[in-house]
Amino acid sequence: MDLNYTAEERAFQQEVRAFMKANVAPEAAAKIAVGTHLDKADMDLWHSRLNAQGYLAGPWPKEFGGGAWSAVQKHIFEEETAYHNAPRIVPFGVGMLAPVLQAFGSKEQQDYYLPRILSGEDWWCQGYSEPGAGSDLASLKTRAVRDGDHYIVNGQKTWTTLGQYANKIFCLVRTDTSVKQQQGISFLLIDMDTPGIEVRPIILIDGVHEVNEVWFTDVRVPVENLVGEENKGWTYAKYLLTHERTGIAGVGFCNAGLDALKRVAKTEMHHGRPLIENPHFAARLARIEIDLMAMATTNLRVVAGADEGAAPGAESSMLKVKGSIIRQQINDLARRAVGPWAVPFVSEDLDSNLYHPGPDYAAKASNTYMNNRKISIYGGSNEVQRGIITKAILGL
Image 1 (cartoon, one colour):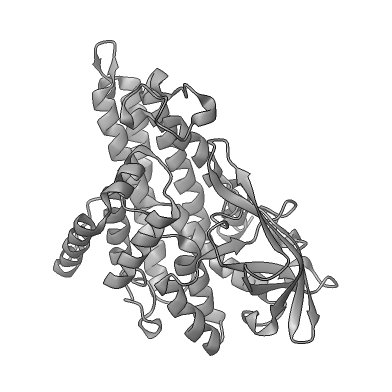
Image 2: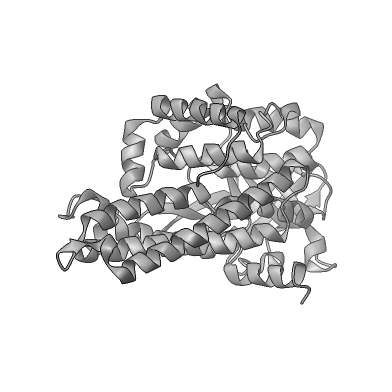
């Protein structure tokens, strides 16, 4: 998206661009370009390079070691990340837990956990969803019962992204069953090595191990691992989710995906002419681009509001809904653009190029399309977000 940047902002853009060119590992960029999943080593390497440069904590307040980036700086960083096929920052520690600790954590928790998030010593995963509590998160059943200086945790979390790599998990747990659902929830930090925790893989439709079930059986968690006040976890959870939903919009990645789609459409032929010249295809492409430009403007407004100290409100739900729709539309159009090359020739081996005879840009078209169907569900389903928008903005 072409913005009228100030001289200072353009200098920052050039700085980030130079860093990306010098530091994005070619192996990781090649994987991202064709839609292959990264492994832990790829993500750890990028994490360490960003931290060494000071970019990992760029959006954090200065009092917590951050760069206090402006809304435009955040936008620039995300755009350059996408355009250079750089790995996306694993969000659970840096972008989700950290803001909660900075706003609601104790001084001891801030001093201990925030540096470990940046160093990569702690890899966090998110313990929110349960089999019966996904979009209706307030109905969660995982219990934490106080026993002296510990909580005893029993229950199950599901769809735990990258939990197989994590050594820590932040969890919503029920600490009071006698009150309204939202009023009896607490926010706990749990060591994944604690006895009684079991991680079970969930293999997705594209054959990838990305998410997990996490089971808790009489897991003892020190009371000092409670964030904020007992039974106030719903407040902290909502604060975290507004940051997550804003990030789900993925403006930079939508822009990069749209550019890649245009390149494919200039290469693929339809009745002897480039597909991009087909009026029906061109019309769909234009509609996506118009929607993306509008979303990018809204995203900047929301993040700018957060710069002034306010967590994003219902606007983050708007971004979550629109961002997920746009990304899925790009994936769908990319799959259609490559035609028969999108068909997985060996369905059991969707995540491999070994048996795919088509061009590189087509090898993962179906993989990406199917995997990203989840975007309209995680972070709060689009149906729930529309309800939030209806109540908070329209007053209905």
